[in-house]
Image: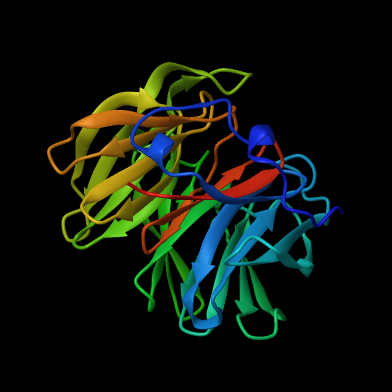
Length: 281
């Protein structure tokens, strides 16, 4: 694997305001299908899940990589032997990784896989969000959101209205859900684009923040603004509290599960094989 920081030209097609005013801090790669990134505050680093193969196959090729905050690839294969790892979250000293029908518990200090939970009834575990004590995991194909606490997994919500739930973000008393859309075709396009949804933590009521926004993947927040990626188009949206939304940047197709720390966005581009960082706004 080439551990060099790649040129911005290999990452971006075009950018629009306001991100256009802020240059890319770094772009790292190549990776074989980087799907998700997470900021590990305790160790001042970024963890990247790398599928390395088909997103739906249990082939043992998936792994996790470590990046410094300036984009150096410090550990290209920090954790190996996974299948198609996707979303991640941190609970205490444990890193949770969604991997098809399994949830891995990984020691955040050593990278040792503590346990791999086979989730009975799961179809395609995708993203994870956490408050540091418990976590919620989207089941993309199963139209479910699972709940995790202390090693136990239960179905928290199952509803067709989730419409292939992908990205999750725990936002105070609600979970913001980026849905893929209704009527998914063989090429993963949909008859109806996915909505940005909000699920009330107490009542589980599902409300629409933005209808028919796109084939949504990552959901994150900087300040009062939600940031949402569209995997199919590569567009990055900003969404205000009132649902007002704007395309703030355009990337190649495959913009996946984004992450943030402070005012920095971490942007995995699955099909380009890169992970880049930009400041916002």
